[in-house]
Image (cartoon, rainbow, N blue to C red; front, side):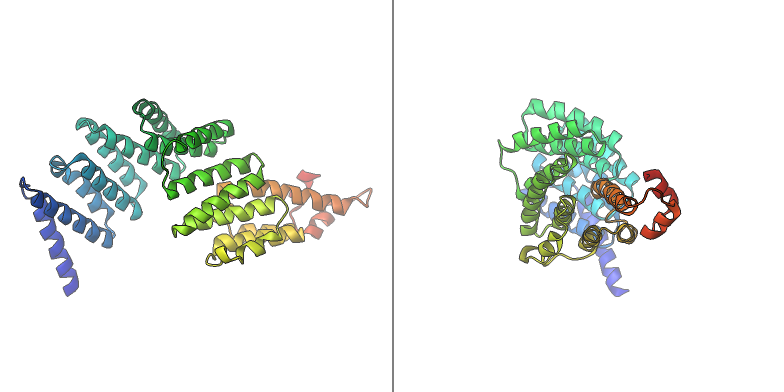
Length: 350
C-alpha cells in the first residue's frame, strides 16, 4: 500500500508540473518533456489507456510551445501507448479522430497525415476495410502531391493489404508494385522492408505461386528474426504453409528443426506440423482434428484458411476417388464411416 501511495503522489506531482506555465528556456522545455515521458510510463504501468487518451488532449497547450517534430514524436508515443494497452476500439478511434481534428485546426498537415495513416491501419487490424479505404485513397492523392516517399510507401502498403483483405487481387498486386517502386527510390528500414516482403509473399500465394511466395516469406522471416521482432514467427508459419501447398509437407520438420528456426515454437508452428502430418498421411480425420485444435492459428487466420480450404477439398476428392474407384456402386454412409466424415459432406462431393 505504501508503494501505491508513492506512485499516486508522483503522478499528481507530474501532472501539476506539466500544467504549470512553460518558461522560455530550453531547460524548461526539456524538464516538461521529461515530466510528460515519466507520466506516460506511469500510466502505462497502471494499464490506464483512458488517462493516456485524456493526457493526449490536455497536452495540446504545451504542444504549441514545442517544435513540430517533437510534438509529432510525443503524439506518436501517446497513440502507441493507448494501442499497446488494448484500449477499446471506440476509445482508440475517438482519440484518433479528435487528434486529426486538432491537427486540422492547428494546420499541422504532416502530423495529420501520419495520424490518418495510423487510423487506417487500426481499421485494417479490426477488419473494418470499408472504413480504411477512403482514408487510404485520400492520403494517396495528398501524399503523392507532396512527394513524401517514405509516407507514400507506408500508405501504398496499407492499400495493398486492404485490397487483399477485400479479395481484390489485381488491385492488391498493383498497390504492392507501386510500393516496391517507391521503396527502390529511398532508404527503407529493415522492419518496413520485411512488411513489404511479407505482403509480396501473401499476394504471390494468392496467385498460387507458392515457390516465389516462400522466398518472400523467408526474406521477411530473416529480416524480422534479426530484429527479434515477434512477427518473425508468422512468416515462418507462412513458409511452412507454402511447403504444404506445394506438396512438400515432409520439409516442414526439417525447416522447424533448422538452426535459424530452432528458437521458435508454440501454437503457430504446432498447427502447421499437424497439417503437414495430415497431408502426408492423406488423412482427412487428422486434418479436421488439426482445424479444431488450432482454430485461432488455422481457421481464424484468413491467409492460412483460404489455402487450407483448397487443400482440404483436394484431399477429400483424392480420398473419395481412391475409395470408390474399384466399385460400380457404393453406399454413401459406408464411405462416410470409412473416412470418418459426415454423410452430408460426402454427398455434396459426389
